[in-house]
Image (cartoon, rainbow, N blue to C red; front, side, top):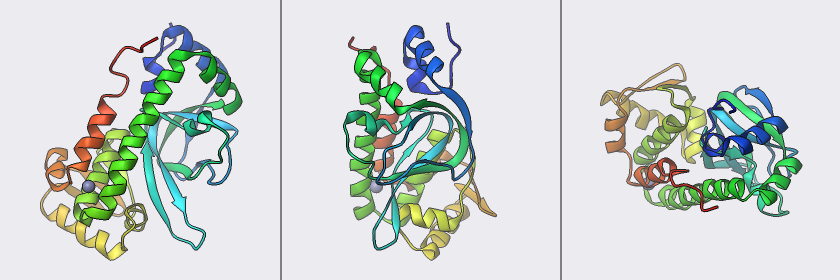
Length: 236
Ligand SMILES: [Zn+2]
């Protein structure tokens, strides 16, 4: 039986299928800022993240960009390529360093169509991403910067499983589509209330429970979708 990989989707598969995917892939390190998928292209590889966190970002033609999703050890980068021929609408890059199993897109696509168990899990992962995307789209329009920053930090925390994360203010401002001065003010307020500590680009979550009280209810909705992944036996 193949050893667990640390990727929740792979580890939820039957040992035979997991072994087959492992035989197709290559374990790689993911340094911070590695680009995994380019916007407007199709990638030769799909990545099952075993640790670390990747961000999905849409850049506008006139400049400026915004984050549209986060993926960690619960899923894979490039799954949308398996659904059809469209070019990818977002760039994906490594936000927090980690490791992944890299598989050629063509080979995974064949397996996606040939193995209902794998297809079911990947569709389940994509459903969770759609739930988060819909919720955070509404959130970004309707909720205050402090609620959104708290939600986003908790979402990074859940995926990275690290209490201390390297995240610059400039970076957080880009992710939240807000000004850097707003991030400074909001992060300062969360720090004063003892929920986080923020020093030299490193954020430490001191109390996830308290931080959730500062976050909007969107966090719980996204978090439930994440924690319910792969809980039920596959229908096949
Ligand atoms: Zn919200």
